[in-house]
Image (cartoon, rainbow, N blue to C red; front, side):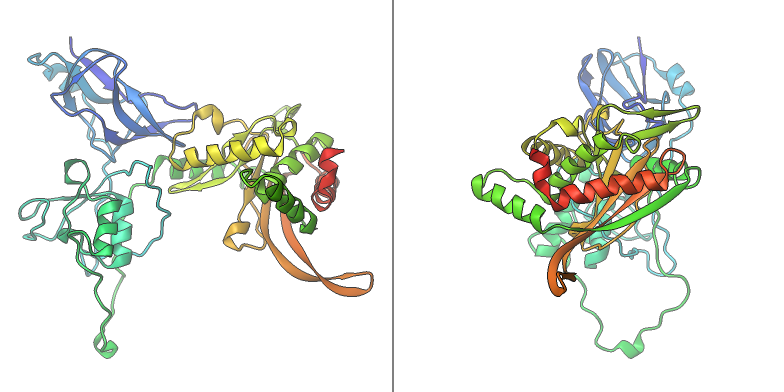
Length: 433
């Protein structure tokens, strides 16, 4: 008997899913428990398994398209079975990835930048060439199938997508095709040289642009920010910390064990966890009629991925050694970028840390991730002149800003936590006494 394949709930916060990749095609045999497709949820890419045996008779949404939970996205049945009744129940076509809309030059796109993550499955975007144009993916007027990442890379490099032959599933143009074209080893054209005669260039009207569907991660971030910065009364506390001793400790650890890769961020996580145990009012959250004080420190560590931000959690950070924290953070950050984290690895932190120091950002404020009561924004460590014993000298200074939920944390409470945090980072021997 033919059965519906519906969009499953693959994470606790998932409201809809984006079909990243079909692992089976129409006409393929499938077995119960066998991976059927890869679904982009709000935080990760997860496999959807078949719940019955049979043949994949009909695919109802394409790669890159989204569907709400419970919507029918495919049909599994016997090879010759009549599935017309189920097809009549199929909803209207799911939201398609938007096609580029050009004001003056159909092949142009706005210049965007995106970090490349080779292991991350790329969502699909369909691009329609101008009428009559021929492509290596097919004949005149064919649709180019290209991932958004590849489209952005091509726009930045000035590569005509119509000149490429995709190496992805179904002829899809993916990141490696653009890289080959840029290096000259593929079938792509070289970036066009800028015109020498600038006086002949005439620019009028709106710039060319293209629209792309917002990913599940980006839509979730948008929804959560609306429930954070507006409803939550933020206030911010900033302090400067001398990092010379912390940096010196890290260097000594590296000398003792070159294989032990401990970053300054790992030290910051450990110090924050210990300081939070001394100031439990900051390791808390507002719960409508009660304030919840957590008896363990689960720190969310913000990691940038292609579509936004995810916060893998170091649970019980106050109990773990620097070695354990370093190994755990590296492992989870790598899997986060590949979108392979399990929901329990990124949901339910009690406190978060966002470090943009590696990007040269001196100071910033971070938005609280509800229901947490605070988040620590960490800037770059830079040499600055300071006065010590009446003389001007140089110290490695780092600025940190604590964003506080005023319903939970008062100004003095947040300030005392930062005092302890600062004292321990400036004297990291406190970690061993």
